[in-house]
Amino acid sequence: MIDAPDAAAKLLMSRTRRWLAFTELPEFNVAIFALLLNYPWEFLQVPLFAGMADAPHWEAVKGCAMATLGDIVIMLIAYWLVAVIARSRFWFAAPTAAQLMMFVAVGVTITVLIELLALRGWWFGSWDYSPLMPVIPGIGVGLSPLAQWVVLPLLTVWFVRRQLAASGRA
Image 1 (tube, rainbow, N blue to C red):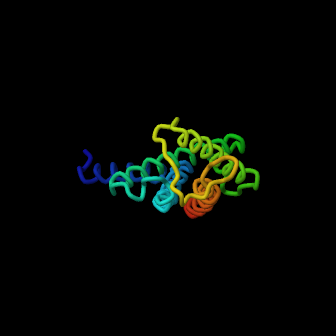
Image 2 (image 1 turned 90 degrees about the vertical axis):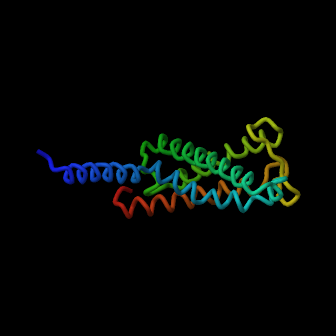
Image 3 (image 1 turned 60 degrees about the horizontal axis):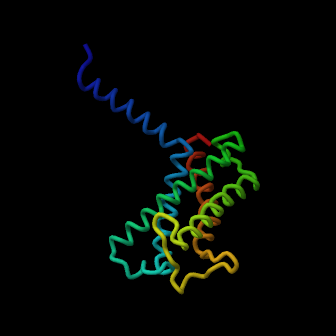
């Protein structure tokens, strides 16, 4: 007969091992670092979008949270596309310049499309830029969202690489 404390301990150990295995998935780490990097960026962009700086606090928080969820999805799409082409989910362990450029380019491309759709009112939650937003001439897209998708994917790769190398997975 199994002692109840032993059964509980075995169950806890089993769940802990599954959780640890889950946290070592590259996708989990990409999503976590995308969250940690994009959420503050979204808040820092608030003055650059019309009405956001004057919005009720909770509305602005919800808007930034929704934008961050979208950022996580974009980051995962970019990650998976590079993984398919590289034929490895661990491509970030020793990324080539081409892989990094593709990772950034996918995010930039998706962002430009979403910005253009939103600025025309054709996206789920359309928006406008405030006069403070620097806009790229010719395409009319804000500099801040584009900079976000040049800087943060590279930081994400760096953080994921360090995190999984420390755990022995990368």
